[in-house]
Amino acid sequence: TYVVTENCIRCKYTDCVDVCPVDCFREGPNFLVIDPEECIDCTLCVAECPAEAIFAEDDVPAGQEAFIALNAELSANWKPIVERKDPPADADDWRGVKDKLKFLER
Ligand code: SF4
Ligand code: F3S
Image (cartoon, rainbow, N blue to C red):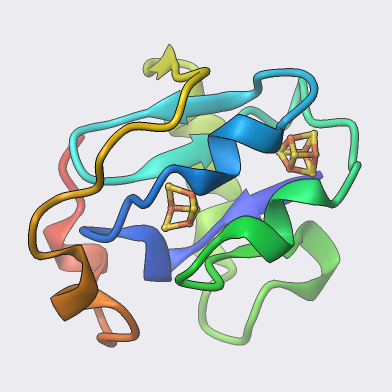
C-alpha cells in the first residue's frame, strides 16, 4: 500500500486525488491519508504530489514510520475525497517544513 507522510500536513494540495483510480484518499482538516484497504499500488499519485509526500509502505523515509499506522487509523474516520480542491492559501509556505506532525488536526 501507499502512505501519505508528514510533508502533506498543512500543504494538502490534493493533486493526488484526481489520479487515484479507486478513490482511496480520505480527507481531514489539514492532511489526507490513503485507506490501506483500498489502495491497489498503482503508483500514480506519487508523481502528482508537489510536496513529495507519498511513498510505498516499504519505502517510507526514516522517522516517518508512524504514518503507516496513522493512515490506517485516520482513514477509518475520515470521509473520501474524490476531486481536487484548492489547497490552503499558505500551502507553499509549509512545503518542506520539518516536524509538522504536531500541527495535524483530526
Ligand atoms: Fe490511489 Fe494508486 Fe495512489 Fe494507491 S497508489 S493511493 S491506488 S493513486
Ligand atoms: Fe497531500 Fe500531496 Fe495529496 S500534499 S493532498 S499528498 S498532493
